[in-house]
View 1 (spheres, rainbow, N blue to C red):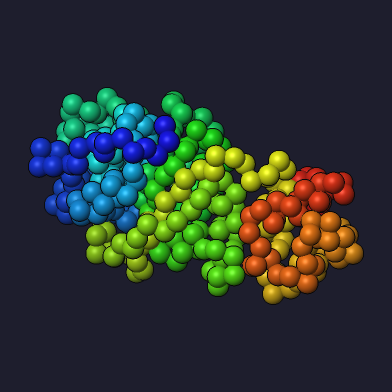
View 2: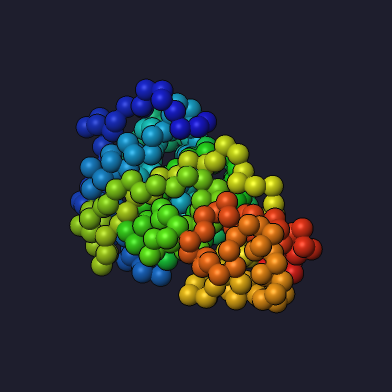
Length: 304
Ligand code: SAM
């Protein structure tokens, strides 16, 4: 299912209650949960924020939504109202065990649409259903690697809406030349068009984080950026930004084998070797990788 113009599913309403501060605290107490920073546990306690995320996710009819880090289920309940199926991947065993019960209690008529998988999202290789959308309040410390892993692993993911730290949201959606443009920006745009979809304040969470959050929307590209090994492109991107103040000729020397080889590859790709990586978009990085491949580089070689 791609992002669609079909009528939106019904908004959560009084008949479909969402979790507020009282419910979240009661659930946490019942489970003996003390939110941990290590797992990025900041739970949404504000139904309006959930409604906003669901609306911003632009789910169409019949979607299978992947949620990473459902926590106590704040977003999961909203997703159960809006999606055909929800697959939720949670690393913390007590939270994963409780979630089906929470769904049964608050959404008895839709609870059978939920599948909970107790696993580290960074390691997920298979899912019970091909997800069409990712909608998640991501654990902040692993948000970028989780997003990139899932986009790489599940081509069925056509679009999504994730909440991350605001500075990460800005980085993911940044364009070449911007101060915050970097590795996450280029790699995310290898897969998708990425845009920022809003800012979320701190007080909608328990516990409240120190910094604001941002919403990021992505829509997967219809066509791949280029016919070239992704790992070779990503290795060039990593090398270019590892030394972002250096010229590409110098920064890509390790990747290409030498500065001279990097210069030749850049010339062949039609990129000025005196340019810096922060000025290039994903298409230009792909051209560099294609020229590198033509010169015999492989992703398994240096720098990859
Ligand atoms: N979605 C819930 C909400 O909005 O209230 C909780 C979001 S909280 C920011 C992040 C959640 O991700 C926590 O439930 C945490 O246990 C879980 N988590 C942390 N690292 C994870 C990982 N590597 N894989 C899956 N879940 C993870």
